Length: 229
Image (cartoon, one colour):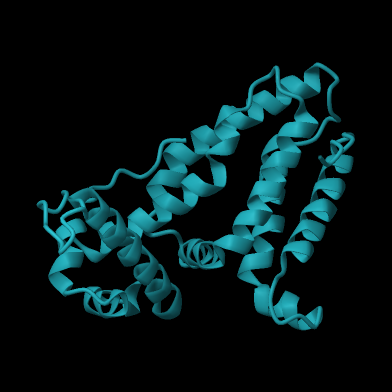
């Protein structure tokens, strides 16, 4: 799927370390990861309006100038994070074709989304906050690239349906269902964990959630979930 266009800045100039082995590319990689993690936490905690580049820099343990070196503005940094979220969630489903087994493809999509809700809960919450606020940074993207992406995926599923390989369901509503049911476990983790009397998600619990959602969604499409390896 095409993503919102962003400018991530330029590489740092080469720097030496006491060993002489630490390359500029590694510095850039580490700093970017540190900044993006700090920014994600800051935006989740305080929202877009409440977050500041200075607070993000402080959380990352870097000078404010370092953040501006990579990102021209708070908006640029924010959209970069949203871009990364969309990439994580939907890139796998970019490659589905009419020749694929619908049960295998949908099962893999559900399981990947559940796994990402477990491994990247802040990302899901940040995306939800953006959408709840009217998607001010993503509205144009939703109207163009994301709408095109959903229609293309729906077209593949329509082909599966016409071939008699799955029940006649609304493909767009199916995508919405997969998005919402899997992201629920990240966006509402406090509610889920409290009701289930758990302190946090554990791998076995995540697998159980994925098994349940895959079974319910695929059965609703007239599909038999693939056997687990």
